[in-house]
Image (cartoon, rainbow, N blue to C red; front, side, top):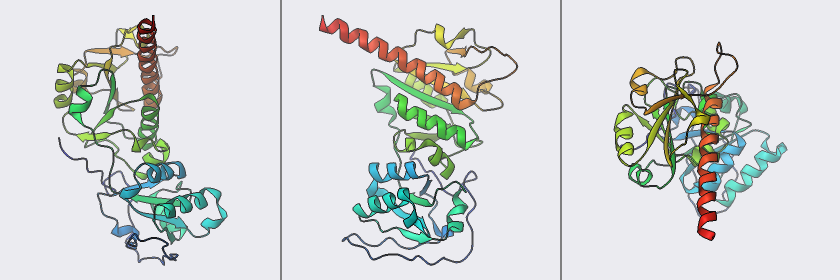
Length: 296
């Protein structure tokens, strides 16, 4: 399986300035860990993920502190309780935050909340592992371009136990700073795999008992009519075009979400949340029945 390489400088990321390096204003380190090399925003390696949003940053520091390459805080961070907490957590992991002008951090997204974190590493999708699970949910996102939608989907995926998300390498948003912020830490828990070929995954997973359901207005049954199997792949289409024909052909069945107005459609992240919640409900209900029978 190819290695994930979520580039901070891809077409979906904020453009980095080529201006000079701002003053760091670092405080001395209190630990034995080597100091992080001070970098300007145009010197950040492309393989590093850029994380903004206080919840997302705290989750990275909690889940993978050894992979953190640096933390930037805006000038005046001391006046913010959230930024003081980030600074404290970082120092507990022997990471010395660097101080930057707020305008520098703005280049990663104006809603950064005063901090940015750089991390080299992400959850990896182990296809063999998920193939052999007794119960599992996988997402196949066919061209989601809005970072707010992808971020919301990853947050919901984390909370509903999704084991992996497949996204196209082209014509789709990647793990941008905005995605991290909206996901509120979900990125650290849900493997995201970029691919040019959904079929190689669906073929192998179908052989292991997975069923592929595509959300589409052309579906004959609603998601609430399904008796969902233990292993499910949900295919979700792009915001404006829905599923591509090639992706529909990979599905065992197209299904729809009931709505009262046929002239509109659900937001992609909302539709995904409904499908995942229904899947979790059925899996939980089935698991409770099995537990009840085993206790008799």
